[in-house]
Image 1 (cartoon, rainbow, N blue to C red):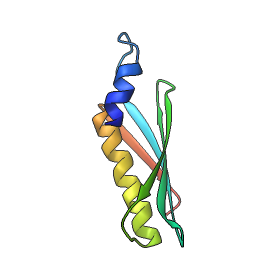
Image 2 (spheres, rainbow, N blue to C red; image 1 turned 30 degrees about the horizontal axis):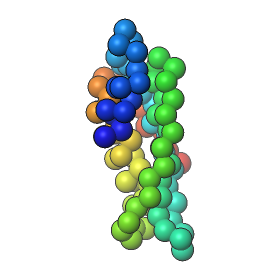
Image 3 (spheres, rainbow, N blue to C red; image 1 turned 60 degrees about the horizontal axis):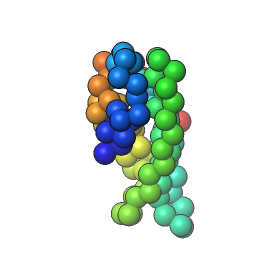
Length: 88
């Protein structure tokens, strides 16, 4: 899982992040559905992800899936507080 990847490359002396900001955007077009997610921590860590969905969704559903994925990732990383910013 992605959280395991981050944990492996985070120095062991690093304190856990207490707050994450999640920026999301989704897109739906004739080539498929996808979502962009950026996670930013209060410790200065920034992670960018892109998800491609193999199922058919509407534009708003894709954006909601991006928010859910971002929240799941921050939970896996041990969040204490999360702020979500999206254009929907």
